[in-house]
Amino acid sequence: MWADWWGFKMEAYDAIPENAALIENAGACTIIHSDDENQIQRLNQEAAKAMADGRRMGIDVDEATAIKWITYNPAKAMGIEKMTGSLRPGKMADVVLWNGNPLSVYSRPDKVWIDGALLFNSADPKRRPVSDFELGQPGEGDVK
Image 1 (cartoon, rainbow, N blue to C red):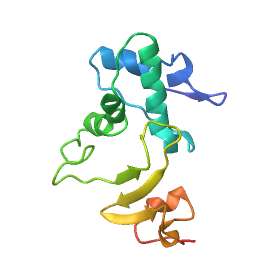
Image 2 (image 1 turned 60 degrees about the vertical axis):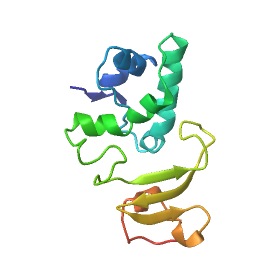
Image 3 (image 1 turned 30 degrees about the vertical axis):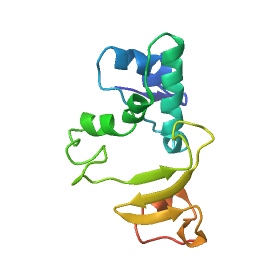
Image 4 (image 1 turned 180 degrees about the vertical axis):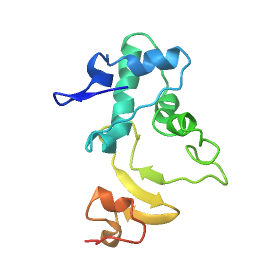
């Protein structure tokens, strides 16, 4: 349980940057998440930082494992990994095609499919929602 006191979450109060790698190394279901409206949009970068922090302390975390921290593992923790969390035939998935390594701060989304519909395309102004919020609203929202 956590408490939101003085503007910070107690769950992260005593955290260290290497926590995710330590949890992974112990064999637990490691998840990178955020309640913050800005940080939730950059979980890929948070996973990359956690991976790098673990490597600096000598825990070898590969990129595929870091991606699982934000995809498969949250689905597994919720007990829905048979329905979502990875790209497999018959599973539900929203997909982001990156213009580079998704763990790089320099990479940007090129295309985004939600519920099978292409809702964002960096090359098509008609497929660029006004806000990130609208990405989650299939077929709705204003476009530029």
